[in-house]
Amino acid sequence: MAMDRSRRPSDPRQAAEAAFKAVTRKTPEAPPAPPAPVAIPGARESVSLRIDRAVLEHFQKDGPGWQDRINAALKAAAGL
Image (cartoon, rainbow, N blue to C red; front, side, top):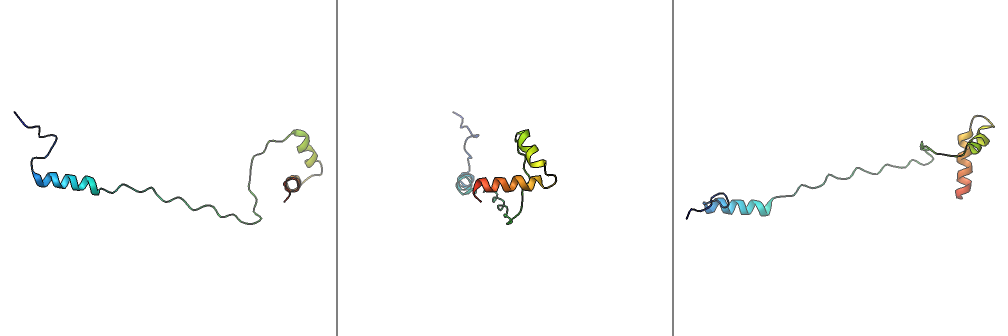
């Protein structure tokens, strides 16, 4: 009866090394998460916002600065 050599090494030293490597193999660690972005006080962020045409026209009717007026109205509504 022939022994299946593909399953186990015939050399005990090779078998011990294979067992040792299997147990001591380090699993790769996940890379560290990137640092959280730092919030700059008073900085504004560009966003896309869908609002009714009538609301937009109301804030734009007084000319330039309409985005600042919308921001002020939203801050007041949020209680900030």
